Amino acid sequence: MATAAKTPEGSSRAGSLSNARLRESLVGYAFILLPMTVFAVWFIYPLGYAIYISFYDWGVLGKISSVGTRNYHDLFHDPLFGKALKNTLLYTAVVVPAQMTLGLIMALVVNAGIKGKTFFRAAFYFPSLASSAAITAIAIFILNADGLLNKIIGGHRPWFGDARTALWSIMGLNAWTTSGTVMLFYLAALQSIPTDVYEAAAVDGTSRSRTFWKITFPLLKPGHFFVAVVSIIGCLKIFDQAFIVSNGTGGPNYSTMTAVLYLYRTAFYQVKFGYAAAMGVLLFLIIFGFTLAQKILFGKAEVAG
Amino acid sequence: VTTAAEPFVPPRTVQERSRRVFIYALLLGISALYFVPFLWSVSTSFKTLPDTAYFSLLPHHWVTTGYHDVLTKYDFKRYMLNSAFLAAVITASNVFLAGLGGYAFARLRFPGREVLFLLVLGTLMIPDQLRLVPVFITLTNWHLVSSFKGYILIKLIEATNLFFMRQYFLTIPKDFEEAAKLDGAGYFKTFWRVMLPLAGPAIAAVVILEFQGIWNDFFWPAIILGFGNPHLYTVQLGITQFIFQYGTLWPQLMAASVIAILPVAIVFVLFQRYFIAGVVASGVKG
Image 1 (cartoon, rainbow over the protein chains, first blue to last red):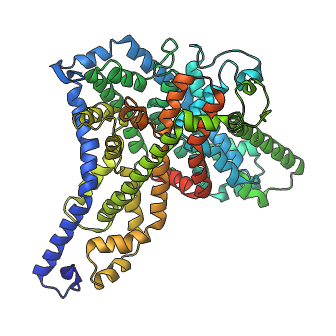
Image 2: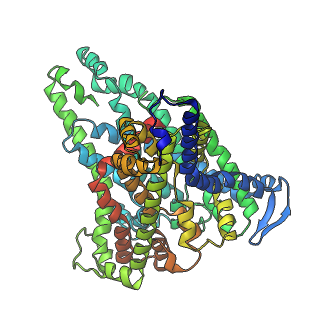
């Protein structure tokens, strides 16, 4: 088959070499043809298509009429979208610091020379891997009016059913679920701190808490930034838990209506695809901004610094 | 943090002891936070419904009604088969296509390779939320909504897997391919018989992470499979519908949750290092 490629380099004539090159190129294109088709059809084309759709009034049977930028204009005057965006930003502002704090504490404890380090690292990470639907089901059970939490604290609040606590309960749930991943990032970052820094501190007789706040914490700075950006992007996409605890409604009283849930409802319950697409484009721009910030801040730099 | 420095710390035994007590107390607290919810749900899955009203970790009477009901009465046997089928097909296609593409981008020279590879990485920047409407409309036009085909088609290959395979192929010495060439093997044969078998660890990681990702997926199944025939539901959609319809049948709901979590838990226990290496790699490489 590959007789041309068999010719040892150098001794071949220019003609057969370029033949081999041509062959290699064609094989290369053939190998990437299917993957590139998938990326083109389901990623790159949809990017342009979403922008196109966002300039139309688009229903279940397709295009209804061109509306220019009205969908975007409406977004900024839609109180429910405002509420969804506010919920999402509040959610992000609470969950990001919460999971970072929890994740860092867990990393420090797991890394403190305890017995069974591998076991605890795995156990704390596990909720990040379990399905969001099952984890949410467990949370609904534990947080219901007669659930375990209320039995422990002696209350009767339906945590997901009360507009004052529903979003906060999702925050708690997700900070709990995802802090295991944050712990792994921090553990990797901790490994990269050279031990001689600690040796110097120990020789100087620096106390442990001082060593942490003056040495470890600042040296983790690249890790903090990385974890923060990844967490922010993840939080802005919050959907599964809000959808499941509210039966897809974003209730009670829109307290669990998130931006992506509103997008989903606009598309599938109201069948306003153009408006939903505009929402998707806006969300993309926000998320893209954070991704870009991450790339600029880190470039090719590693968490490890 | 400071274990590495242990030998250099001057003897401070009282401080050291109180530090260890503090660390283990913290560990106990965190463990309770992480273990109790799972233990509580497993225990509930073996309780009778009246039994769930009591504040006791162990069931008074161990029953398997919860499991029996969800598997037969509430059709979770079918949902499990659906999830397993989709995860198997999509994982196989990801291994093959990510291997093929990853090999081409790592080893074959062709004009535009770098630009095309950047394009592949660029797809990682396009969030599912933006793709939702256009992908749904395209699938509708092609009559692929409410069909496994539609879901499989959009998941045939994910850029992270291709990237992962490419990175691994770059670490394999070229001697192997050159030997294969001398034996007269063509490009595909070299890839299939020589390079792919050498990429065992990378394939294992792709298999494990992709299987877990598809088994757990909620967003796309909800959109593509969630509006039609319940026979198409995955386990995750089954749980959601169960919550919506039968809310407080706790033993059944917890049994369904255990069923949804168990396969991933088993894979995790067996192949822990692949998961952790995967996260750390994504962290380190951004």
